[in-house]
Length: 384
Image 1 (tube, one colour):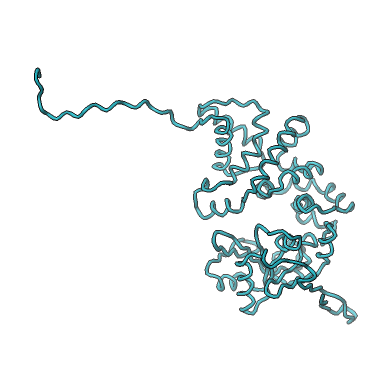
Image 2 (tube, helix red, strand yellow):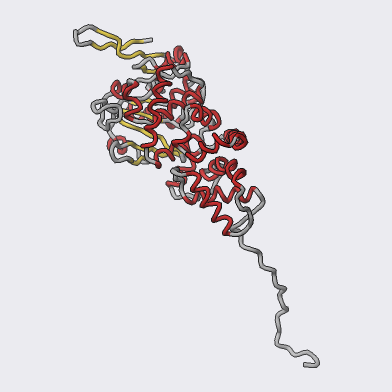
């Protein structure tokens, strides 16, 4: 392990960052996406700092292969765009770069400053970028070119101890962004991290702030949960902390009042988790204008699993009429409020439920085939 030092206000050298070797962090380079490595290499060859960061590093350090790879650099978005032909700049307040390769999105962001708090949108340095992240194990910076891991906040120690520890003070972390409550609970559910008592209290105390988060952002988190492969564990911990009501209030009421519904719901979530759904792939296809129903597991499919238990307990009218389908669709949208999934995905989800029951309400009735009459040749036969 190497230690970077900086001087405090009295001029005394103090530890600033710890740099761990592969023998210490145990990340297997074979689990690192080759394209992510190439992006880091190109940025570094152009004279920039570049690292893999966030959830990908957390998964790698735990011996898991990440689903996606986010990267950070000191290069500004316009410079990144010039280095990669297959890149596009997105965002309004804080601009990011998406590099698309082989149907996979690699998100590259520029180091952010903490000048305006942890949700500020100004560019900064790597150590500032670490201080504005939510939990310590999400502030680990991995360089695949030399397999070093840079840690400014003790994240590797917390990760190895299985502890969920915030970087931002408890009186500010959820005030600045309430969705961090959901993310923290997700990390605890998926990774088996313990939640310290003080953090638990803050999560429960500030949970009501989620009611002020936009429905579109909550919908995005909602689909991430459904497509995580760990929806069962996540919904259980969201129920424990009474967070479900800020996603789908009607679902929370059902859980509290109908024990059989809850049993069916978690059974359906277990089936969904077994599919290992990739919501990111579905979102990519939707953005690129591809057929939203091509492939196996799309947003509509995960949504159909979410609605199955509700349909089973609502006694909806089920027949092959378009009116039955319309009423079911209307009831499903009302149940999901304030979640607002794309209409085409919700329609497809309800249609899947109908078809899984042996009903195809939108299928046109088959007309009886007419027997073809022999063609007349124009030659008169006897008796004509």
